[in-house]
Image (cartoon, rainbow, N blue to C red; front, side, top):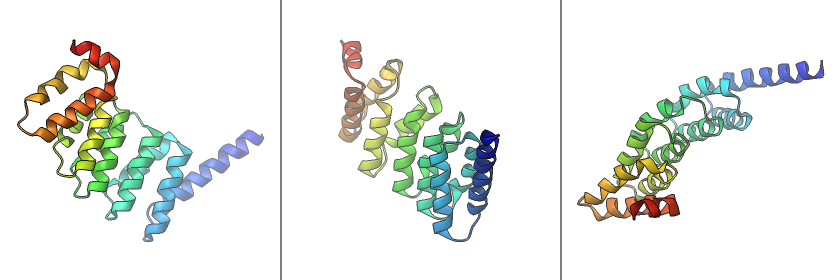
Length: 172
């Protein structure tokens, strides 16, 4: 019976937090987003997906981080559109979150596109995230060495280097 009460309490807390997502106060929405992420409750992914388009950059960033913590099966579908956000902070967090989608081809392609981002910190995060992808993506990364931009070649080298010894061995 105590377990039922705790489940009910959690459900009530989540309901309250979801209600707070619709608040006009940014601080209230931000707290709700962060708390939902901490709970790692999979059902919170759907209401969090609605704040990914919030007018506040801070809310969008926090929502990405919360979804990354929850890791719903549709994470890449939710995050990929944010790789084109006007805010570099949002794109940076999107690049980090996509590191959790290593079996998703669309996420891989979005990260490759982010290697070309004008903000170095976004592009470098994309490279770090690409380094978490399986070795079978190595050939696609190697093709980027043909790019005219030294920055793209450097970021590609960073991604491959961070893949570790297995990537180096595969290159031999």
